[in-house]
Length: 243
Length: 320
Image (cartoon, rainbow over all chains, first blue to last red; front, side, top):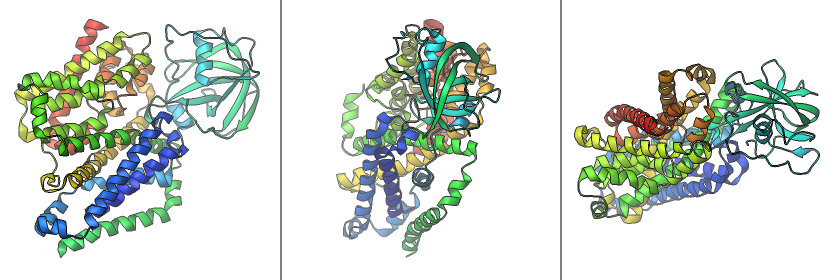
């Protein structure tokens, strides 16, 4: 690969990374906090591309004077061919743009609710009826605090639907700590007015109450709490799909 | 003349490829809708998106080292005796906040600038594991076991120094084959800086893509269930998590959270996971092959794996 082709690939890669950083595209793959670093890294790549093309397309006087052409050919011979692979992330980000992890990934891993932090404190839920609660928060309160702070409250959980063990849909959200490679699901089983007949990956609000019942995740035996659904509503996927 | 024709070749190939990709965009996206393949693509892209900032900053820092830091600086900064330079370089890893993708090109640049390979390699191994960001993440992931943070730092430093000293005894300089890079000495500083940056991004980045593809494959292909059946077994659980750390290639800032979620496994086996991961994984092996050569990584990766497992087990026996 010659330097001009490398410059174009760097430009595309930098452009794709900048685009992912300034739009919500990156939220499908990484934490929001990485965005400024994506933009900065993308701009550096663009700068490297521009400087590469500038030095290469400049009238040949400087290079021709200092280095004879055979050396140039030799140099060319050693340029990294593996760099062509950098087109794959460009393709992935600009053309394919795969969706955030969904029910397929959720079905592959055990629920993330594994061990209770020993010093966890569960303050009373904020006011609201229903009160919006994250799946992770609901599950922790239900399992590790025996639902003490959930009694007599109607909560609103937001997640996508994934098929559970007995064919009943579960409410799931993926939890990221860094990027989608470490994404693990947090699962809540449903009873009562269960949203049925929805295809997997459909996003819903589910309003309901805590019930003293847990199941074991069939993959890692983590506790999966239940929610007794009073009502539910189909929604569009939120901007930030991970918890 | 031939060279000129070849040169036109790769730009034209690139142009044709790009046009074809844009034209075939919809059928291509359609191919990727099968659920498993879609998950693979998401994981592949996200590993790269996560790694690119660290790669770019590592490459830029290594270009700065290559172009703006004089050779004499390293002679003054590190102890003269190589056996003492190894621990000094390991501890210096504390100041590089980042994950492992950035430290490979930096170690390459240090070797080019005359730092003894043993010290540069100790830095390469220690930096991703002992920096404050990674140790803070570990503390957050293991709130009930603060000893994990100390154990991780101690075992990682121990393994990095052991590998540095092992290199001093057994390592041979001709195992390291740094890739041919345009001769920076003939260029102006600005031109040299950008040439080094371009070359390293293309090179290390290309290998990073290979590693990300491998990691995504393992991520989708290895069912969680297999792991769960190994968890109860003392020896198998250590080997399973050591192997998993290599295969999953999770960045060192996130691996503590994954280790925390593997709660059926003993703390000892999870410490092994945390010590092995930042030192040996598919992504790193691919990048080390690219930056240091095949003969190097074929020897270095297995030895590092053994050193990391032993160091983690040793520290676990004392601290956990």
